[in-house]
Image 1 (cartoon, rainbow, N blue to C red):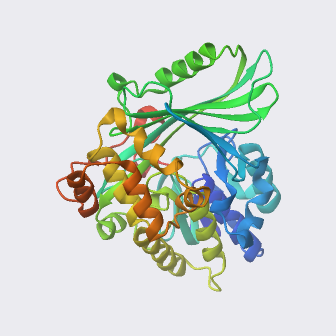
Image 2 (image 1 turned 90 degrees about the horizontal axis):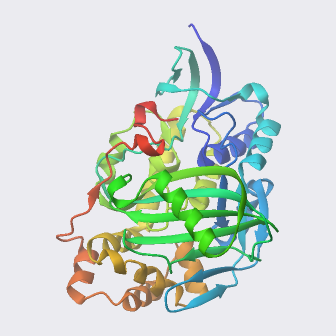
Length: 411
């Protein structure tokens, strides 16, 4: 058998792939594990804000080494009200992830700057023809094609900026929705890094992943971030890093058909398994849970991983039905310029309700309060609840402009 061999190969160095690699190596230190990513380093200089409450206390040991910033509260701003929420926030950085991976796996287990030409239950083939045979393959690639699913997209572009003077943030400004809503739901996030450095990000909730006519283009988003800073009188001294993300917001679909569209015998985690918050797009909670469940298997074989990863994805799909309904309500039952009202309805509720919403654990009472607060019409609300007559965009078109190629070329 020509080529190299590894016990476990993880394709994709995103957050889900990284957490799976760390958990599996901790549980099975004697196995050879290889992680493959197209970047120079895993996630390089990327920044991932998250809520500590999304992760069960008993599972936080897996992500604590990756944290590089902590706050006890965050802020949201809407056209008619502002609010500070006393919930713990954290920040994961690429530097921390890179150090953790190299310390746990070793330099030879990280294959970076590698294009993945294809994978199957028996291994991974790289763009240069190099073949890595494996006992188990885990597909953690991001990609941009989600066949048999429909909804919208969360399109973000962020810039890590150093300002000429101190910025005003003592804690994260999670959402500033006082900006123009001409393209649908749009907001700015500001995460402080140091006294003169902050991560500023624009996010759009859009029917399309890329449309220059609607201003959904990394260059246009970057320019609007500069405008936001200029209006606030924050003078930029240096741009330290930029990153773009396109995440699916799933409102409906055929889960079984979606799963069958993947490679047989290969485990799936992250976005390609549908393990995202359907409405918010975050993955930290489900990524930690999936990583630990795979690591707990006594038999780390491809067949066991594939079976368990599907079970995890099925349970997540069933648990997030209400959140998919909110996606339908946002895209198909709300006027584009009033979509922010749904976020406003959520953030006007009690802090515990907001925390449970982000953690995918809303109670029946929580859900009723969110729907009543959204103030949508009865017919629209019923249509969203029943998934009847709502025209959602298919999530099966590649988006090369944002660096998210098709599945066969993703990494």
